[in-house]
Image 1 (cartoon, rainbow, N blue to C red):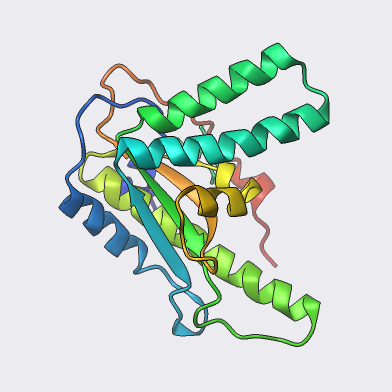
Image 2: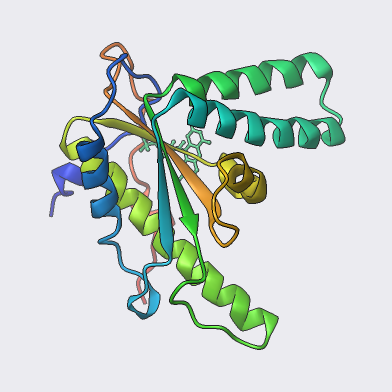
Amino acid sequence: MTLPAFVAARRSIRAFDGRAVDRAELDALVEAACLAPAPHHSRPWRFVVIDTDAGKTALADGMGDRWQRDLEEDGVDAIRIDELIRASHLKLTGAPTLVLACLTWDGLDRYPDETRQRAEWGMALLSLGAAVENLMLAAADVGLASCWVAAPIFCPDEARDALALPTEWSPQALVLVGYPDAAYEPRVRPLVPLHDLRAFR
Ligand SMILES: Cc1cc2nc3c(=O)[nH]c(=O)nc-3n(C[C@H](O)[C@H](O)[C@H](O)COP(=O)(O)O)c2cc1C
């Protein structure tokens, strides 16, 4: 069996040409995301499509301030912190569109104990990953580049407040979306070492 070509064709692309992405196209990507499997037939995700300079700057500033504080507490030297924060700011403000994927408790079960409550949230988070993959596959299918950026999962409250989102929306993942810079070469993708990664029983 060969791999489905559309799965193999999606790559993380981190450079874009200057073109803006039409909002109807962005809506189609979010719709594809929302076809992902989710626990209890819920749709615990919320997607914030950020294609204005003000929105991108607010998010980059809010998450950047928090990251700067974390790096200072880690004892990273000031010059390196400055480099990292500037690069991250440029990455976010330079992308044509950012899609911020958030989780809510909407439709999820509640448990009286911490263990099952955490499992329920974990289950929803898995489904958010599936939704994000759908979004990126749909983007690749129409010639759009995308790249998942982890940052919000480290600072969900700061990301939420930067965009004045409802308190129950918890940002978990960010996807850069745009038309690919033709000169960008995706990183070499190693072969899948199937024997190390899967077991039959
Ligand atoms: C949860 C998650 C977080 C990621 N965070 C980042 C990130 O912060 N910055 C980045 O450039 N790529 C990020 N990536 C993209 C991975 O680096 C990329 O998927 C991986 O190198 C495989 O490359 P491919 O997507 O082209 O197959 C992330 C991917 C995932 C799934």
